[in-house]
Image (cartoon, rainbow, N blue to C red; front, top):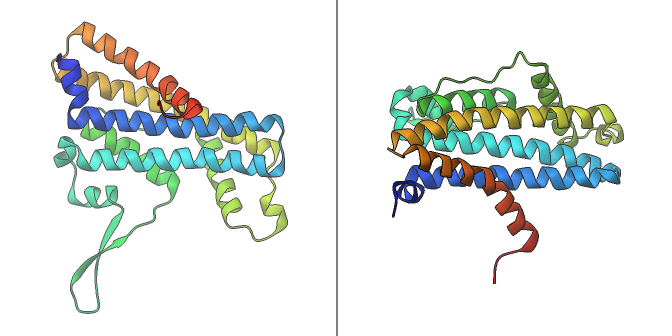
Length: 223
């Protein structure tokens, strides 16, 4: 077994593969719902918004879990660790400490997750929220929230502009995810002692994984 195979079988290697698989699955959902927009019924429009934001939520949760369990988590403060676990310390009526579930806004949760995940893996990265595409993504999150908590019939309507927001914002986040993930995985691979050839092979594996997963989703499990 070569160093690449050993690393893929290790805890960090399995976690990275899990992250890539989650991202690929959620991406497949978004692609399928986008293809369904060729026949844009009101339901299809709503479903596209929901799958886009579900992808953002799943990605955020996975990054926080990976950051919290990373060996590099000792570089963050206790309060940051609690934020990764989405917990808040409080005192109960008996004066004893308890941890309550926290529900941060997705926009700030995403920024914190990306920044902290990168930091615990030794990379300095923050989402460039000055990009106009960030505004598109934030508007899409608000649209999804409106769909999930409708107060009138009109709240269920999704306009062409809102669909465009979702596509633009998600494409932007895809690009930023690839950027930070390439930085982190390359650093991990080199730090693990992989040769330049093994790093090249691992890059090829990462590039083909989404396609392999999409084929499994399409064709079902192998017999």
